[in-house]
Structure formats: C-alpha cells, structure tokens
Length: 292
Image 1: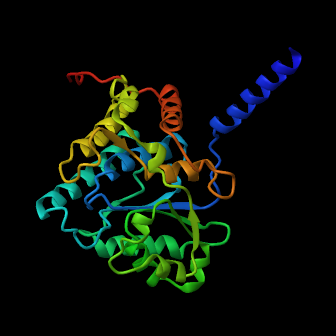
Image 2: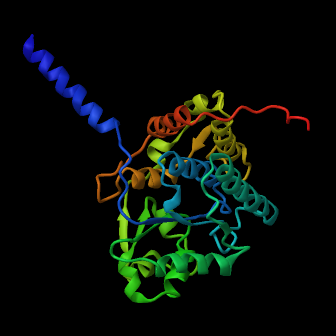
Image 3: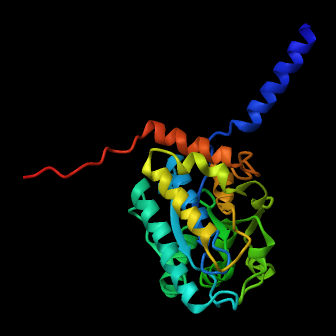
C-alpha cells in the first residue's frame, strides 16, 4: 500500500512539474514578424494571444518590434480585396488588443507592406541595439523576408546576438526574396521548436471558456480568433480556433532554450496564464459617463 501511494505521489509530482510552467524568460528583447495577409488567417488569433500573453507575463516592455502582413508578394489564393481586408483586420488585432490589455504605448505596430521602409528600419534598429547581454529574439510568425531585409541592413557583428525562433517550415520556405538558408547564413542562431499547430489549432469548442467569459478583454481575443474561423479564403480553419504562432511566445516567456521553455504549449497553458492575470487585474467597471 505504501509503495502504491509513493508511486502515485511521484506521478502526480511529475505531472505538476510538466504542467505548471513558470514565467522565466531568457535575457534580451523580443521582436515579432507576422503575416496575416497570406491566405491563412490564423495570425488574427495568434496576434491577440501573443500580445495578451506578453502583458499577462509582465513582459510587455521587452517587446521592441511588432510587424504584420509580412507576405510581401500576394499569393494568388487570396484576392486583392480580401488581402486588403486582412491588412485592416491585422492592424485592429494589434492595436485593439494592445489598447485593451494596456502597456504597449511605447510601440508602433507596423504594416510590413504599407509601411515597408519604416518596418525594416524599426527592426534594424532593434538588431543594432543587440549585445551579448541584451540579445534580440525574433519570432518568425510569417515569411522570413522582412527579417532578411533588416539583417541585410545591419552590421554582421550584430548578427551573433540575434536568435530567430521558428516552428514551421511553411514559414521558413515561403520567402519571396530570402530562403531560410540565406537567413541562417547571416550568422543568426536558429531556435527551432515543434509544430505548434499540433496543440494550439483546436476545435473551436475548446475556447468556449473565452467566448463565455465575463471579462471583455478575454471576449475580444475570442472574437479575433473567430474572425479567422469564419474567413472564406481558406477552408482548413473551419471549426478551428488557431493561435499556433503564439506558441513561440509561450515558449519564450517560459524560458526558451535557456530556461527549459515550454516547447509544446496547449490551450490550457494559455488559459491559465491569461486568467491568472485577469483575476489579479479585474476589468474596470464600465457605465455611463458622469454628467458635469
């Protein structure tokens, strides 16, 4: 009997160690380059979750660059009109989530096509500011071209302080101007984790906790992910809620490859971090403005 109790306790302790991830990011700053204007609309939910996770982890000040719509050459699978809609939706996902979750006033969320020069310059500035004790982690949440253009514009001696997190060859190999090997040839560090679609592209019912939550910040996140699900450009998001690219931020805030970060995050992991923050930081009550 005593032996069985000991075994059960050991299993429970191991399970706790696996599931109870702590916020323990590596040193350095974070930059995010996302698409969203390509046929797959998953970056709508991914962007919302990414911003909310950074705020919930108390790491919003470490975000020094965010750009979206980084697919620089339109894919024939998405029409000009639909792509234009995506640019606007991605800007809303960035700006509205950042405003509602607060803490991002230091940042401009760039459209990589409509503000191409500013986007490249902003990322290049972040690269130039990198040192051994303050490296730059770049989340590759879309095609690699903007990353390549910014690296091309910066001194080679800075590139050894750049770490690019990636999770899917579909991003790596989709560049119109740079191959993934050319990105590696700049001398950056590749940080590769498993495909985050496995556990973060899930049946939409797994997000009912957000849909039905009383806090409008959580409802906003769900709504942005739902917009991707009802998008009519692709069919493979039907019935799904997909924040797969946010798995790279989940990996980074829990340690990345320096502090044993969570390589295969789940919806439960996201839910716990966000709801812990919401519980400690309740939404201000809304009501009619006071009359003067």
